[in-house]
Image 1: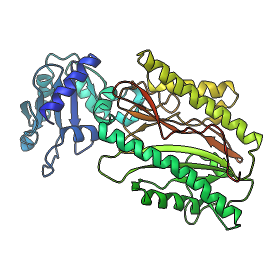
Image 2: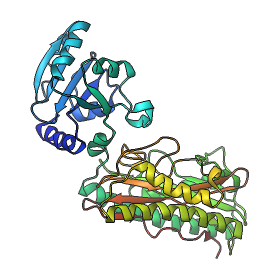
Image 3: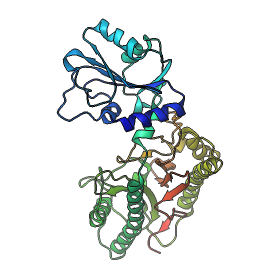
Image 4: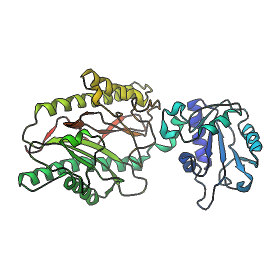
Length: 397
């Protein structure tokens, strides 16, 4: 924890109208506290510590007697506890004057990504006379925002992924047209070879799924489990990668195609419903930021979901509309979600997220259209990796 980060936290606390942010950690249980504190790597933490950043004034530390020097690299005054009663007294001391504070807590675990502080500790803190609210919005400021270098890296990665989609459909066309045996795993490996050639990396391999496999949103082919391609097949490609360098951030897109010269109406009709949901969500975000209106991730999900429901396919849209994107493919910012969770985190500048509605017809096929959205420092809404898909690709055309 540096003095600059403390100042940034205090500025964010003023915006959120909070009296402070209480960081709690026990043996690395709170990844956000671990990263923000950034203690020297040789320090071993085996006891609970608390670090309180008030909206005004100097931070306050609460550390155990046998580890009382552990937080000395961070600014602030220090209180030492030894027994459990002295821990209670220490909390009252460091929280004195505060009424409403943030912790890594989410009411009813609505946003499990930030719910890293256990219920007992929240109860303990509340006994010090404060109201505990979620730090979900605060976490975004320090976990989800990109700097200029990351933004440029993402734009480059998104451009590569978009090109790889075209190259992959070309690869499939050449193989099938020349009657070479081809299956999902072959295509996955081709995409991975393109990643390597272009200096990209990924935590998990990309996905290629054919026909009924595409109705499984998290299907992944393997060397031993995969399906072959034949003319007349429906194909879904989902690929995510980032530049192979420290601090780079992911791009993540999904496209669909048909192994034929023309696309049958049943595939195109479903795609257009999915596309309508995608565009409804995107336009909602664009309009909100143009009007400087504050919006939440759950509201974006509602826009896509309501469009698809009105078309009669609501029960086949079985996942959230989108996820935060960062150094990990699923980042720590707001998700576009009012299904799996009610994500009431604000969408803020310098963050990115996917919009990827889908319709999955069990035993038949599934359609997903995924784009990435980035909110610039100046609140411009940018789609990376354009152009977006407008129709199912006729691969053999």
